[in-house]
Length: 158
Length: 204
Image (tube, rainbow over all chains, first blue to last red; front, side, top):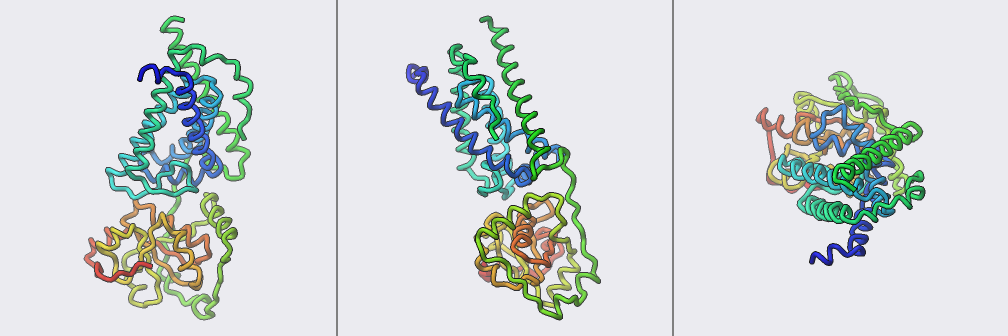
């Protein structure tokens, strides 16, 4: 098992899955920030005036981390941010369910409406495990962080 | 590489990603057509006065029928325009319990329960139909043939609830002009001990 986890192709696969999912999830949120901030506000977790800053910053974090995970640039930092974001998302979904808020998940932006549910929480937990795995095992392999791909990765994604 | 320098590079990486994301978000928000203010401001809920609500306006006498676009693409355009323009005028207004009672006595009101169907089956305001706020677009075919000057009253659980506002925005996007939100909702209605209905399957 340990050998399998240390296999760099398994690590690459995990990075690719996380990267693609985060890029896909960010696109609609970036395209229509107002719809996303309505979703964020519906959770009633953030103080009302700060909702817009969160709704503006988080999709770009998702996109950048997704691109960096794909490109193999700053993998440790990106995977740690992704881990923290997924912790936040999972907590938000579970707390919304505990408070019996019948709200839109906002997971993939405002365009794909789906209510918060155990499935959504489970998806986030699965991704969380994947992100933690990438974080832990990519730090053991310093060669992963070679900045050779730096120029390609920082280009404007719009 | 020592442990502390490794930690430093990690912090540096995180800081760099945050700074890049912040810059991109800021620049994009300045130039985007759908930009939003950094500090979110409260959407003012505008209450409607009795005289305006019960006035016999031209919409009542002339029976102007506004037929909304039936085209899917037109609907999508209208939908995204309504959701993405925070500066747009309020599309619905708030009515009180007394005003709702008056409207129900007069008739000619389309009362909609925006909660999910389980809550609706447990109990709803007598005469209300059920359109779950998150599934509003699935009801487009049923809503489309209705005259757009129909007086619509929407309610949810309480002012905290988002479903009623979502439904109102959707109905505004497909052309309904007279939308009112009973903001106290189901909780307010039960508290006032008004007539409830838990039997009739009035799902639209």
